[in-house]
Structure formats: C-alpha cells, structure tokens
Image (cartoon, rainbow, N blue to C red):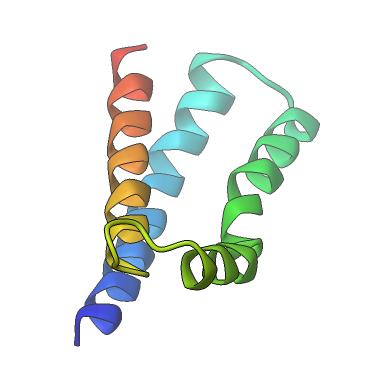
Length: 88
C-alpha cells in the first residue's frame, strides 16, 4: 500500500504544481513558450529515468534497505526544491 500511496502523492504533487508554476514562469518572469517547453521537458526527465533509479536502488542498498531511503531522499529533494522556488 505504501507504493500505491507514493504514486498517488506524486500524481497530486505534479498535478497541483503545474498550474501555479506555469503561471509564475509565463506571466511573472515573462519567458517565452520555447523556454517553458524546455523547462517542462527537463522537469519530467527524472520521472522518465526512474528505471535507472530502480536499478541503482536494487544494486546499492542504503543501510541494508533498497527502496525506502531512495524514496525519502527523493521527497526531501522535491520539498526543498519547491521551498526554494517559493522563496523567489
């Protein structure tokens, strides 16, 4: 059930952050659509490369755990990135 909740939370986080972030980038910063598309593609790149993160977590455990530390590290990076973005 933890994996299902994780994917649910990722979907909500990505879904709810797209609209304010696009508004901020397009209206507040005034970037053009090509720059926004580049940002969007780069922001989804880690999600597309998740197969490699799975291979990494399976082959290199952290404190004898395979998935949980990597999920926690990912959420911490996500939260810190959004806090940093919120400061600007």
